Structure formats: C-alpha cells, structure tokens
Length: 426
Ligand SMILES: *Cc1c(COP(=O)(O)O)cnc(C)c1O
Image 1 (cartoon, rainbow, N blue to C red):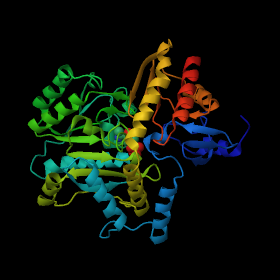
Image 2: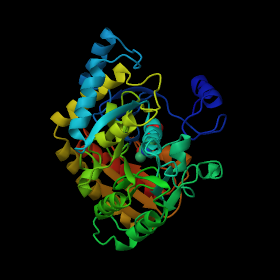
Image 3: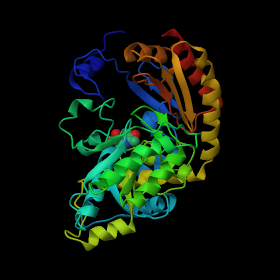
Image 4: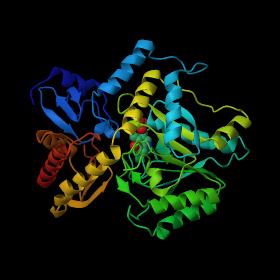
C-alpha cells in the first residue's frame, strides 16, 4: 500500500478494538457509507457484511434516521437526566416497554451495552441486598458467553476461551457451567440442563441471577442453542428464586428472526439488556429493562433508589434516533427480509462444507457463521476479503456475517461468493 500520513498517524496514536498501538494492524479508511455499502478512501465500494457489529440494521445514511437527528439537534442535543426529562426518552421508553416481553415495565438508559450489563448486574444485587439477602450477590452463567468489556461484564464472559482470560484472577468470581450442546433444532436438553440445576440447588443462596445471551451466543463463539434449554432455565430460576438476566444486546430487534430471541422460548426475563441495533447503529445507547416487582422492591427498601446515573444518561439525540429506528423497523417487512437473508446465506454458503478447512456452517435469522478447523490470520484474510469487495471481519476460527436487513439477494450472493473464494484460498 502507498504511504499515507493519516493512516500512519492512526497506527501510531489510536487504539482500535483489541489492537496495539504501533503494531502493523492495517485499518481501512472509510470516506462514505450509504445503504449496504462502505466506500474506502480511493473510491472502492465494499458490501458490508457486519452491519458495524450487529447495529446498522437499516443501512448507512438513512434519510429517516438523519431527519430524526436533525430535528432533535434543532431542539437541543443534550440535557442532564437528573431532575430533568424530555419527550424522546419518554417516547422511547414507551415503545421499548410495548415491544419487549410483557412484564418488563421499568427502563434504565445506559451509554453502551457493557454499561447496561453493569446496571443489570447491579439491579440484581441491589434487589436482594435491599431485601436482606446480602449473600445473594454472585452470578451463574454459561461458558462461551460474551457480555462486554467492563469489570462486572468481564466477570461473566467465558473465563478460559473468552477475551478476558488474562484478568481471571482479578475479576469477581462467578459460577460457570458448560454451554448447552443441544443446537437450535434439538429438543432434548436434559443433559445440558443438569449442571444448571445442580449449581442452582447447591449455590442458590449465593446467586442473585443467571445471566446469558438467549439462543445466540455472540462474540464468545457465535453458537446457537435450543430454545428448550432457555425455557428450562427460566423454570429453574423461578424454582430457586434467582433472577434471569437476558443479554439481547446482539440478538435484539429482529436479528435472530424474532424481535427478541427470548420469544423462541416464549419466556420473559426479569432483566433485559438491549443495545447495538437500538439506534440503528447511529449512536451509542443501550437500555436495561426490569419488571415492576424489581423496581418496586428497590424503591421500598433502603437506600430507596437505584444507585446508578451516568452523565449522558438518555442522551436526547440517541433516544430520538433509537425511537425513529424502532418505528422504521416495525413499519418494515423485517420478518421477510430476515427470512430471505437466512435462506440466501444458507444457500450461498453451503458449498463451503465441501472445503477441507471448514468445520461447520450455522445460519439463524440474519446471522451466518462459517466455523473453520483452525484460526485464521486476520490480517491476510481481511485484505483478501476487501480485495473481493466485501467487509467481513473474522475472528479466531469464525468467518461470520450479520448484514443490514436491507441487503438484496444479489448483494448477499456477492457477499457469500466472496467469502467462499477467500475461505477456499486459506
Ligand atoms: C456487544 C455486546 C455487549 C457489549 O456492548 P458494548 O456496546 O460493546 O459495550 C454485551 N453483550 C453482548 C451480547 C454483546 O454482543
């Protein structure tokens, strides 16, 4: 590549996700983004297979979302949320309560997915603490999970294969059981659920909540598991008086084929985290929702308030664009789009199963995962994918995509053909 002083500055001074300053990790400079396309400096268009990590569900530079933001900017861009409120927050909370599973009635607006997980964990601890159960402060979770990069969230990520294994000795110690082996279509989960039951029976006096990603485990391995497992976990949580936290930061807003992945198991969690696609990928915003039972227990017992409150809580721009994004989603034919994407990904990627280097192909909703037998060299494979005109960012043994819902059949075919060609070369 030609010498580029901007990219050199970037490399020497700016951290990117999980990167090193000064290392030779190439980054590509984006100069425009429109619909399903990213344009790189120099003019090369790329079909975006990542939706900027699950979030850009309507595509880039959407006129409706742009307008929502412009209108809010013309009114005001931010006000503190302590003692003040605004219409965008009220309308967004209303619609979130309406579309999430029924008993969720209380909304906390957080700055990012990780923060919403911290808040969910704090709510669970405070719920039991304030009712006189100080020993119920630990979490039970399944391995291969990913819940974020902050310290509480890190403590419930997979402790060995996850991204935070380095900090194992420093993090709060939680309870981990094996990730369910029963795949999405399997109904017999008796083996998988045994460990959950044993741990709950033995440790429920110390456990305030089970936390997991419903149906789709994202960054911890891109695994899909049986809704029957989730339904059983819900039953066990009730039986042992432990709360259930569903982290739908990746799965929320239609990605799995249901508006929320919990719907596959017909359950509702006690606490729900949403983020990523919440604003259609425009701004950082997340939310933690709980039942009235939980919010009232917190109100009725000292200190009588939930002990959390970020500076930029419920930022009006973020709330306004989130509201517009959800309305756009609900007005669209997203179920059909997601179904079409699932079908095309399955068909387009199926030939990869003939390749020696491929271990498994998994598709659910608008998520396609090719699991390889060996980890890829990200630098090489990323450059090849870009050469083939697509933006896909593999990690470890996984080459996976979750495109914007507006992607066309032909664009998916281009995307999957590029993936096949590149996987065949490695
Ligand atoms: C991305 C993600 C998070 C963390 O969200 P951030 O906005 O990156 O802090 C938490 N849980 C799940 C399931 C995620 O996919």
